[in-house]
Image 1: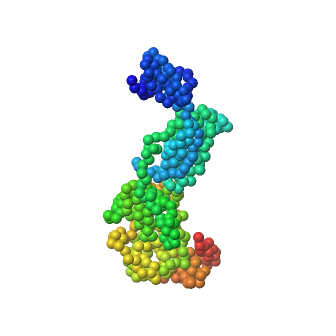
Image 2: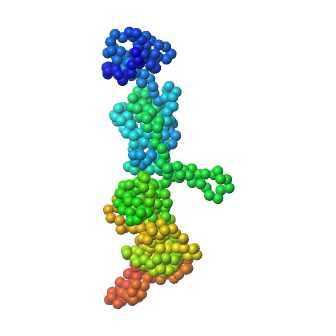
Length: 447
């Protein structure tokens, strides 16, 4: 004789019985002992079909007796298999006083939420909105990141609390139990990625035990395919998600994508939450003095051509490594990797750093087939605005006279003389001069 397993029994329809939780079922002589806590009942059966009917019924009713009593959200974790994603840690307490830690992703919880509404359309308010008692759950974003996962915690905690306090026909339903039931992957979660375990140690601390929490790496999305040009870079494809380990001011960022780590141009990356202008500092029209370490010839109209050893002023430091510099009355983009600040020693760089600094990173405007997930594109300041605001700022500070740019001999003439040379009737000159003067005042404001 041996213990009969429920899965060995054929499937039959259950009958109406009321029992407590089944612990074991053991055969004895011509019958079976069905053991319930705290009593045992002797059940005699004449054939296998009757026995199967009894067992299936008992198991079915036993499962219905188990329900979730409390759910507590403990936090979230980052997972890297089969791809990068986040899961919430939920401590589930059942009515039998057992407690189990489970891990669930937000998309799965939202899919459950939609199924629950379909199962209970009245309680979901589909028939009459005033009858709705099922709590609301926002749809997941197309791309979730660490920030959205963190800010969603309070919403999810409130949803779980409201869910288990619904009427028993909902809160104790098979669908709810299935969501919170322990799975093998809950009992044996995957090991954390090594990058998550990095610790930031506070420097210059008197107490060596002062250690901060784990480093949270920012996530960015790749907007276009990029092929590495050296062994220190990595190849990326549009739509890839990368984590930023280091943001170098020269526009080359050190990233990790799955198991790959290397340098990529910042111009190929965009934050998930919105355009990156919020991360960039505002223009500094007072300027910072820098010296060029390498000559560069402008490849686009908004760039500057400079020789080695020239002193310039940096007025806007941009994340892509192409800073806006001022040379006299001229402004334009210039690769920051060819600059070093006056009064500072030239940095001593390793061979690896030299290798990746041979060529400036590509600019965003040169990238073909770039695809952003944001409806609002990057807002860039034009060079005319930089020059106008620079002249305005320097005039207010008294640093330089407000002189027009000298591009040709004709441009040095006054507007009145220029119009006389072109034969414009004198009757229209006064109106034209006043119009140009007003337009200049309106366009000269510093933004």
